Length: 143
Image (cartoon, rainbow, N blue to C red; front, top):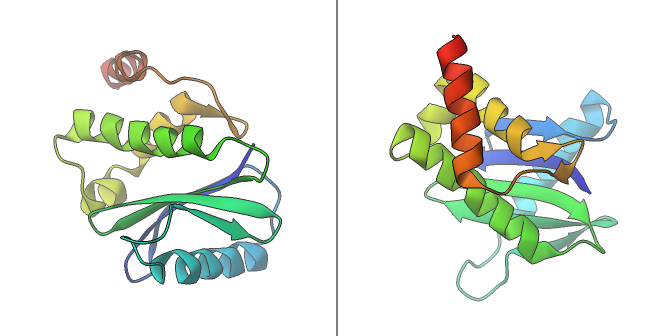
């Protein structure tokens, strides 16, 4: 199960956060800072994209200046979540052209819609890019 999803830039500014568990605001702030310190300090060339974190595991991927981080249970398949991160970025790229940090900031409603189409209650529900994009087209028609 996914515990939370955080997208942060290199400076540690959170651009997206989705929580699938109950955390207080203090816990959220502390977790965001810890995740950034942990992920940003790792060597991208010689270390994997998986980090032990408290009683969970952080699966992350860096695209340009953004860190996409999923906190998952230790017994889950890390590669499936790494692929989910890649699918998430591919869908955003398909919709925006070449997604950047400003797209996440100014079109946050679309980013959350993509997450809601892919993930339900902390579990991956949809893995087809074409299905997700067709659902987003239906949403944009309704607007």
